[in-house]
Image (cartoon, rainbow, N blue to C red; front, side, top):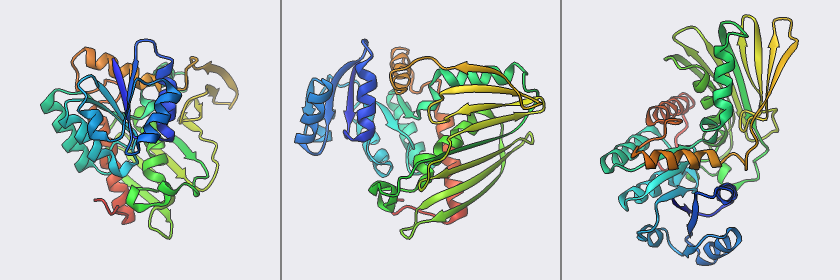
Amino acid sequence: MKFSILAPGGIAEKMAEAVSGLKQIEKYAIASRNMDKAKTFTDKWGFEKAYGSYEEMLNDPEVELVYVATPHSHHYQYAKMCLEHGKHVLVEKAFTVNAVQAEELIKLSEEKGLLLTEAIWTRYMPSRIMIDEIVESGVIGDVTSLTANLGYPLKHVERMQNPELAGGALLDLGVYPINFALMAFHGEITKVQASAVMSPKGVDWMNNITLIFADGRMADLHSNMLATLDREGVINGEKGYIEIQNINNCEEIRVYNEERKLIKTYAVPEQINGYEYEVLACEKAIKNGKCECEEMPHSETLRVMKLMDEIRRIWGMKYPCE
């Protein structure tokens, strides 16, 4: 499969590293609005072609799957452009700015019979299945609640501060605790509570989110772009709890009993860097003629986007591009 990247930046570097370790994936093309940047990236990672405009690359009939690595504010625009040019698309998280944009893209992909999926890597990792199996084993009994957090000092990153680029903690960091909760708890959310500390420019620097589910379970979530957090997820049950070390890329799973004694640890499989699982899922879905990946179906992408829309409604936070 001929793999291409639209907008080579920091996150694209990680994706290039991942696909460099996959023999079945052909590193085909890089498109940037700056030809020198495209050539530099192409030479560094061994891609075949460099393009100085996005449309020029999308007019290349050899391009099969395009990874969209722009800021959040431009995901909709360029994912739509890819689909209109007949390309399968892997869109970096957060999928779009809001659910309306997401719904339009999904409808277009299904009309054209093209794969469209969200690059939220934790949905594709083997650790997701491992966590589900541990919970389902009953070792910690009936699960009632969970907590999860993610935070890095990113105040210096311009796009994170810029409302025009859909900056703030929610779309970049908060999406991970939210996905962690929705992977563990599958039922209907009946109540959402959310608070945030806003920047002078009007994006959320940090936030707290509480989700209450129809079955009575509760998820408490926190994301923060001003501080280094432990990135831990904890799933609580009547007989103990499970600690997930680093919800952003699980490093180890630890199970504790009701005396809070560690009873078992689980190592996760070795990986290139974690991004490879998204690409392999795309390859499988495309071969099977699917418009979505089973690991992150369109229904779940929409569920996350609608939830983040509701959270921002509570805050009164709207992006200029909406």
